[in-house]
Image 1 (cartoon, rainbow, N blue to C red):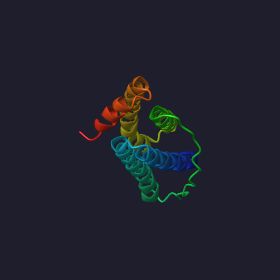
Image 2: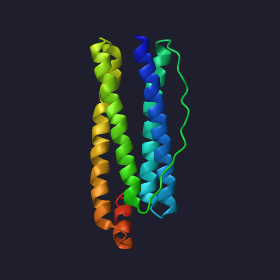
Image 3: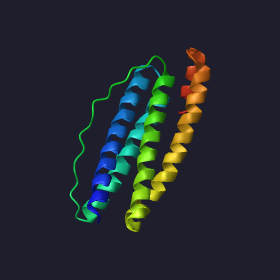
Length: 159
């Protein structure tokens, strides 16, 4: 494997794990705010991001490529409403998507079709997640600080 691709895969692992911990943090914030349904959904995103990291990690191990264990960066954000948290999740998801697209393009240009195939399904799942987060953010922006509307929004995660 091209050493530059291995380096980029290790960077992707780090980005995915940092994203996972952001989702976990947002989950806790939403639950503390009283939005247990949305918090539970955000926690599921945490598990998905960890799983994606592990797929890449396992791929490197399978190819006897050294894995650089990621350092989790401190999570620094402030929020006034749940829409701020969903905006943060949407923006981070877009960063992950962009990194995957750049990595797939790099693999394609370097004729590493095996690694490209590992990453292609991730592009589709990221697109779906970005779209879902954008839709949820639109709903939350309409809810504003209306407690009844926020409770109905949160309930939609439990049904």
